[in-house]
Length: 385
Image (cartoon, rainbow, N blue to C red; front, side):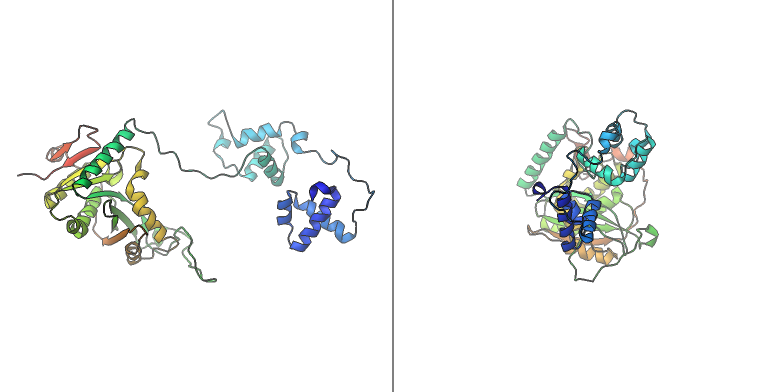
């Protein structure tokens, strides 16, 4: 319609549409005009000032000039503020780039502009509202791909021998109580789940520390939910509970176990306590444990992340984790069409932090390191004496 109408006709046409629709803003947005334009059209229609043939219409090019035309430095100053370059110590570089802040910053540089006009100007310059995008994992190790090949070959060898392969990690800690849990769920109209306004630790009944063990071959998860610290002792205790509750039944008479894990945290590459506690588990069960750590900056590639933890998050979305019983119930009912099952249990043990493992204790470990990145790949065997 716009190409067939002059300025006044277009304005009054939009006024009729707004009166029929009952709202001005949607019409203004659809027509890409200001609300004042539609309001002016409504005023003209209501007063009877309708367009008549032969009436004078503003000549082409008439009307107020755009700010970018009347203010020669506005665009260049705006671009430097919205995408700052140069001095990294500039305070504005680290402030939020909201319309209000940009208007204030431009005002300090001698420019006068309203937020609505600034929005249109930013859009015309190709700017848009954007959120942070998670994509940077960190500096990749030169042997990253080679380590993944090594892990793949280890998994194939263990699977061929029908030995168990597990992926382990600790999921995000959760406050126990009537707190908001991210996500949306279908609910009857008018029935809302109300939760605390603030996620203060003082309002909680403690914290839940879910350490997961994912059986790659059986597509089965085991979650040991602690209430204390995520330490190496807790990590190994979680593996111990998986073996005693599940693993020994699924893999009777097996004498080898492969663990894949990331390289940090309670099951980290440099964590001495992790290796010492694994040696204890090896001696108890009389099974050799081979560990393959994922290379640096690849923790999200750990199979447990997208084969177990992601489905747990989906299953308890929008549900307040009000108690340990609720958490265990939700974990136990996590399933997928591909056949994932999850078993969970509570661990109320206390796990002290800052435990030191001496050089002498490390020398006592029966650990055999791989020739390829021995810090990432090693096998702990039972003591023979």
